[in-house]
Length: 71
View 1: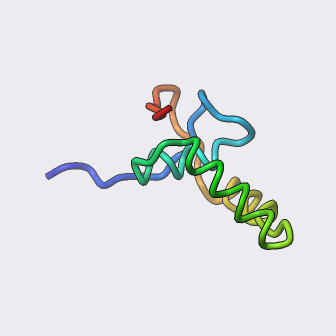
View 2: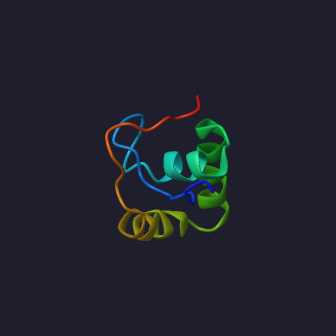
């Protein structure tokens, strides 16, 4: 059996805290697509996305040095 997937914020390839990169790696989606969706969601929800990003930054643990990011 394979090891269950974990969501971790990568140490490389991130813009701010790596939340979008963590979501992209976990869902196997391109990180650019996740960032665009996040930006649009933040704009259309009266910038509540910034609060959600901060909460996710605290919840999602930081990963090890080796992490693959799809670009």
